[in-house]
Amino acid sequence: MARQTLLLVCPPVLYATTWWANRIANKPHIASLAGYVRDLADVRVLELDTAAGDQGDSWDRLAEAVTDSVGLVGISCWTSLHYPGAVAAAQRVRHLAPHVPIAVGGHHATAAPDDFNDTTCDWLVRGDGEHALRDMCTRWPSRPARMTIIEGVVFRQSNPDDIDWANYCEWNEDDRAIWAGMSRGCPFKCRYCVEPQRGPAYSGYTVNDALAITENLVRSRKPRVIAFSDPLFGVNRQWTESFLDGLLERELPVMFWAETRADLMTPALLDRFKRCNFMLDFGLDTASEAMVARMEKAANPQLYLARSREALEHANRIGLSHGIYIVFNFPGETPKTVRETQHFIDGLAVSGPTSGWLSCQSFFILPGTQAFTHMEENARTHGTEIRHPGWWRERGDHHALATDVLPSASWAGREDELRSFVAWNHEVNARWSARYPSRVQRFRHDFYVA
Image 1 (cartoon, helix red, strand yellow):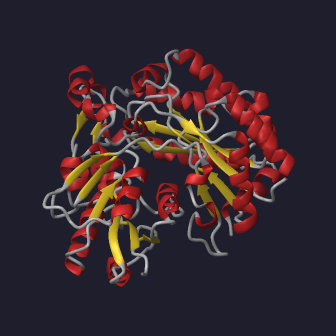
Image 2: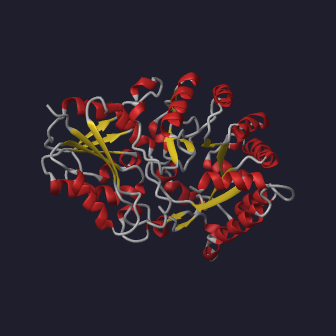
Image 3: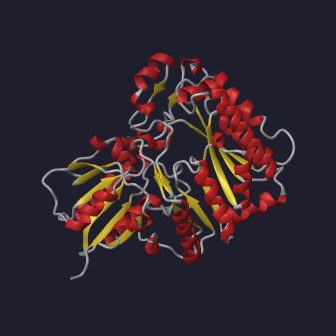
């Protein structure tokens, strides 16, 4: 008897195409789900959010994918940007194959289950979806009478045999990067972040298992980049040092990327990352002590910024290619705190070579975050105005709607200045990139250009 097909759909982004311009592919959460059930089902992944142009093409591809062999459709409402597309994709599956059950999961589904109903899905999975999906692919159930919410069991990422790494993700020789996670969970609870919704559970592969997985992906797929999707790479210092030492021993012909916090780094650890051919992105988010406290980035804002400055300055000295990410206009932001952050950044590379890139964005609300649940408190305390708290349900430019925020009463009458960081961001990058050493220029070219 032929096996049934599990169709995993990443829906299109309907109202934020400029926001989603990079069209992120090789999504590790989808690859993990697929790898966990490949022994039970023929799995097909359909990424509809990676294509530019007419949405009609996405719906044609979905229609072609919903074949007679499909026994279950899983739709990833990964972010709130995907919500309108997830609903539209579900409605089309209902029209094409009314008998086929639909499961929806992802960060948005976890945070906002009331956004879904019987017309969009049969099961809504909150939290990690691996165990729930495996149960469905074991039983291949028929559609229930009503939508059922499943509280997903935390998937402990500790046994590498749980994932079919030989068929981890669909791959062709034109692909540049493979995304893979070596751990899940984050000990920090930043107020703007969706990761704390998963709970406090942290799990990760042993150093030897992580090295074996990485080497296997490099040898078998030959990517140019291995991008680690861990929410916070480097949170375990001893593990990170041993893992980097293992990469050095293996001399893998590939570049690496990871996201981390500058305050977790030491000069010696950054030296290791540099020798291993890494690009690091640092989620600094703010350089104002007041905003560090309001975001709950660290218990000691002064120490957080001192350690971050030391790490970022050392990254420049050794030529470690890196990005620095800043979020402006978080609730409580004032003109003074903006100037403090800009002064910190401007002081990182006053003279000498640089190797960093600055990326700034305006705060936007996400369901399930502490900023979302504390909207009324922020309004009372700071005069914060979130003009479109359910922007993902509205039609229009989602970036414009989501970032239509007055962070504090001190900006009243000065709202035209809330976007001034954009021009400053461009000026900083022009100044920094003009002083890139040749080795940094080569690395960034090889990393980004096919």
